[in-house]
Length: 171
Image 1 (tube, rainbow, N blue to C red):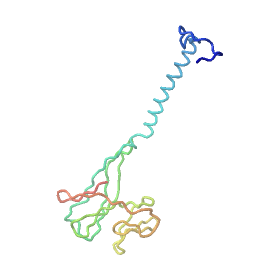
Image 2 (tube, rainbow, N blue to C red; image 1 turned 90 degrees about the vertical axis):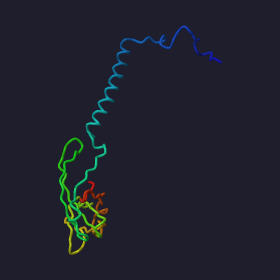
Image 3 (tube, rainbow, N blue to C red; image 1 turned 135 degrees about the horizontal axis):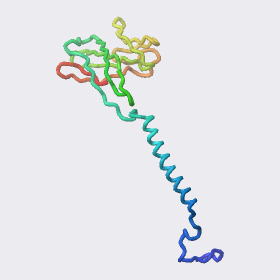
Image 4 (cartoon, rainbow, N blue to C red; image 1 turned 45 degrees about the vertical axis):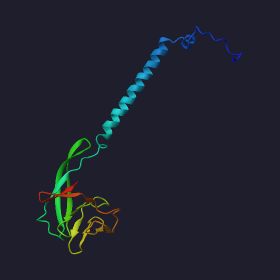
């Protein structure tokens, strides 16, 4: 069924035959195509440059806490560490404080000493039997649970392992 208002179809003519493609139209189309492809490449490379390696998972490092023979049960031991880590596109010196303890001398717990509120380093208060944050008077139990103050969550508990008589914590 054909529409009588349409011109008759000539099978000898193709779609390009109706309108001749001028040199100007061809170059204009080629320019915009190449520019579009280049823009996608620039945006992709620029985005990768800005984001860097920050989206790649950081490999965890193990920090030696000390000999398990020196870690007396019931006592909280403070350990300061410094290690070189790669932060996006630069190497930086990461420093931190960890607290290790054991109630029975067989199972060990290591807490990150960084307050979960604003990142201050907490101190162990032996008299109170709790961690105290000097910045905003926050208090944490020995297990790192928030007792008072503004921190939104408990101190981070780290994975531990005992290897060759030494306690290690995974940062």
